[in-house]
Length: 125
Image (cartoon, rainbow, N blue to C red; front, side, top):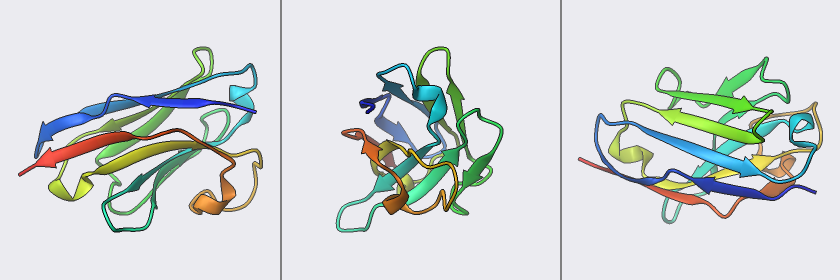
């Protein structure tokens, strides 16, 4: 099992940047593909980005492609999401998630087994 704790959220103006971090417990972090999801008020939780267990492959939602970058440091048991050119519509609670299975869809939240508590990102216009 793995425990996940997000940090780095906050209030930022449109066009600004934030970097989210997700610290994972346990010695098996490097075996888990990881993802970031977000949930705005009264909306479904949606996929943002994902990364394979060794970081060789990354996946992005069309809405964030070219603005967000997902990365991981397996030596530090940490997942990152660098968010640039932020827009008001990026406002949401951001969650990191880990999945045990390496195959299948990285885009579906049902494929993920462990979740953090979330960190709030608010982008003002």
